[in-house]
Image (cartoon, rainbow, N blue to C red; front, side, top):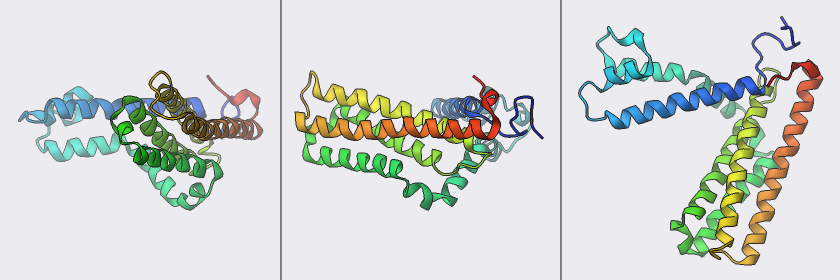
Length: 222
């Protein structure tokens, strides 16, 4: 059954997926902060359940098992995405864009091996971290492109684009004003970063075009 905008019921667009992923990020981050704050508190699990809004647990006694179960339930959708990623592992690993992103992470690792001074530099750590995150987001994006997952694919591509943009900022910090990498290294790094960034932008355009083809121009929501 299709909705008023032509999108079948239960199929999310990129904006719905992005809001959902942001909510899941926030819940996971809040849980980890609470766990760290109350790690040694004997009432830890009760406090966490209350702070997380898991009111159905407040009259129960087996806190550890129940809290873990609730967290699993909160993140169940992401677990399903992970299962989907595993099933399509071979497909995304062969995708040229993912190969370029993965090759970028390997190149950065080799750059670190050549210069031990980079390993403790904040900008270098930022570069490596966000390049790796971009690769991971691409893996999630490229794991499925069915009608039900198309919005998710675009949402993850947007996240990958954000990560690679941060990596590009970090690369610039390594060259100027610090001069921690040579001009030739910087040029090679920029070429790889731009290759991934431009590939993501192009792929987002393709998937958005496919969304419009399937559901019509009026189906995109902001």
